[in-house]
Structures are given as C-alpha cells and as structure tokens.
Length: 187
Ligand code: AMP
View 1 (cartoon, rainbow, N blue to C red):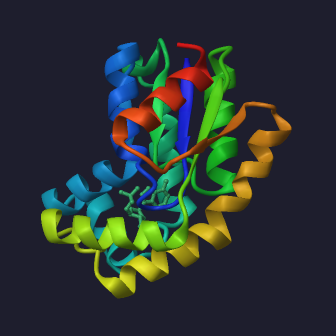
View 2: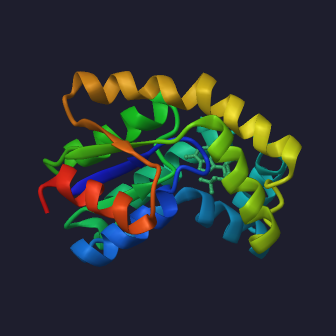
View 3: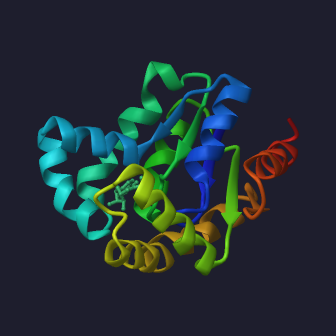
C-alpha cells in the first residue's frame, strides 16, 4: 500500500504518518527529515539543500527527483510506504507515479489533512520552541505556507483525477485525526 500524507506545514503529516506506519508495518519516509539529516552531515545533497530549506523554499526538483525515485524503488518500500512531505510538485508526483508503475504499483491513497491557516501558524510557532528547527522562524513559516499554497496545493487535482484523494479534518486530538485516517483507508 502506497499512501501520501498531504497538507500544509503544521497539518500533522509527520505525526499521522508515524502512527500509520506503526499501524500498517509499512515504512514512513519523510523527505524533510532526510534533507535535514543531509544538512547535519554536510553531504553534497545537504550542502545544496540548506539554503532553500532555511529560506522556506522548496529544494528544486532537479535536486530532489532522483532522491524520490530511489526512495520509492528501495527494497525497504517493496510492500509499500507512507510518504510524508512528498511529492510536493507535479514533477515530483510524476516521478513517484512512474517509479511505482515500474513495479506494477500506484499511489493507493492520498490523505489531505485540512487545517485552517491560523491554527497552522499557532502549531508551527509552538513547535519552533520545542524543536528549534532552522525554518520555524516566523518569516520562514509564512514563506513555507505561501510556497505550499502556490506550488504544492494544486497537486491535489492530479490525485483527485486519479480518484485516490480523501479530505480529512485535521483539527482535534492526534487520536481523533488518526481514527479519521484509518477510517478513510478502511483499516
Ligand atoms: P518538511 O519537514 O516536510 O516541512 O520540509 C522542510 C523543508 O525541506 C521544506 O520547507 C523544503 O525546503 C524541504 N523539502 C522537504 N521535502 C521536500 C520536497 N519533497 N521537495 C522539495 N523540498 C522539500
């Protein structure tokens, strides 16, 4: 089963992806986490990605698409995977779709976590205090939300056309949202 957790920064994708991974036994893969690790380790990918991440911009597709192909084609993902934070552009979606198709697979479900903007900002500023991420400053947060609206949100149409997208109310407790996610997937 290949599932995309979709939605704006602060919608709860990472939290729900982790719970879903536990529930299904499938690996959860988060490109944001992989990129932050690459930055910490000073790898060539990290060196390229850093300035985009810190500004709240997307890392360009030319840099990211090969990484996505590797993740989807990895033996760890043979039974499927939970995608957290990707695809984020149409080109990325096409790369994911193609890599899955090569295995005779497809995206089985996209869960669109919907949370109002003021709540997103509140959550992200709260997380900034706890985690100290370099891109959780007020400036980077508003940039990330703007980038999401302009570049990532339109992608939903691609998956609506494929009839795999389900809207999920992202407000409420972690447990409540997790139950909505499981219901949507028929688990
Ligand atoms: P996230 O942890 O998902 O909020 O991602 C943090 C940052 O990493 C984003 O603001 C982007 O700069 C970068 N990033 C993560 N995933 C992607 C992706 N699929 N495409 C481009 N940039 C990404």
